[in-house]
Length: 498
Image (tube, rainbow, N blue to C red; front, side):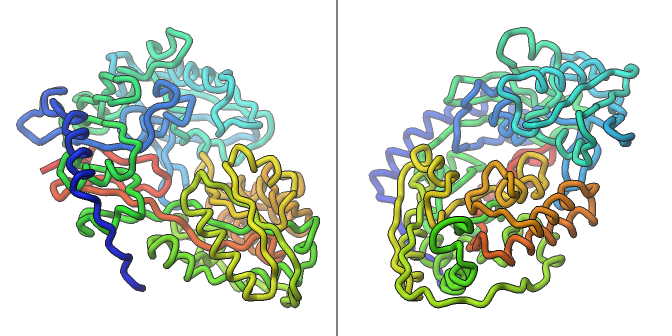
């Protein structure tokens, strides 16, 4: 694999960025007691809060990455549920019973009990809009005694523990819910207490010494929100930040390679082919398009080698997928003979227009005539879902908040899926998707998921091209930073700066 070309940041830009960040991180050591046992962890994050750090929004993932708000359940790398604020659980039909961990206190000193769990989950279930993880889910909770909670769903749901791992279902103290908006300041149970939020500029967290899981190694966390990718990369170069998330591909080459980690994301760059109308209603032409695509050249030229060529819809962020996958039998490819197709994509993800231009060249060499329609996502989504393109390029998350890919597969390829850009309606695919959705979590479900993936790929309804990575920067003195494909963890109790 060739090395990406070096693209250096101009010295004037670097100076300006450094000055900006110095101001952002100024006083970080005084934002709480640095203590004799280590330095505070300085983080440069990409996206500022959108909803005042409400756990009922996507801001919940920030609370999770800072280890301040916790959930009943956490996920291991395979997506299986493991104890967190709940120590064990069992299912009886539509009802799950959870035992609440003893000895846990919120950051305001109040005790975690069943009533606190019921309060948080009931607030989430009644929210408008609901947290994504509860879309289409009727969920009620009840305190059976001081440390036992039952969770009941409208229909039998094998994924209730996985759903309860979503950061949007974090358990917070009663004080968080006293105003109309949920306020997580001083209300979590994690090893770090959120003590201050300065709008969309910064946040401060201090170590919570009564954490049930043991004292954190770092005395605190100082967060600065830096939307500009060049500025975030500069923060690592100049030593202004200890941990930097989402370094752009274009900046990765100028950094000390020992300081960056490329983390596979559960996100696949896919070419969806319209199976209902137009040229790709013909399965042999879908096969011809699949055969014409050189994904490796896209990875090298567009992503500078910082992505993984796809073997299926599910990539290396789901480490179990590759071992379960078997060869897929495809339809024989036909001859395009100058067939005209229109490919749509959007500008919101910087790489996609370039991917589209590369695909245009590859498919034209195979005999297609290719037109491109590239717009902002807000202006093109409805046309894509209505089947107005022959093909559509999408960067798509393959696991949603439950950490399980069955929901993504059903949404995108089920006959009544809500995001069925391929307009696929195939009885064998639907049967495989239902089996995957209904199977209990664990090895059997993972096997059913891969069988469903194979059923989709056999139709050439989608051509997976590559799996994206997120590039994280850790300064030389950082120890124990998390590199999480699901982006739920970043600084943990084990993280510190030498």
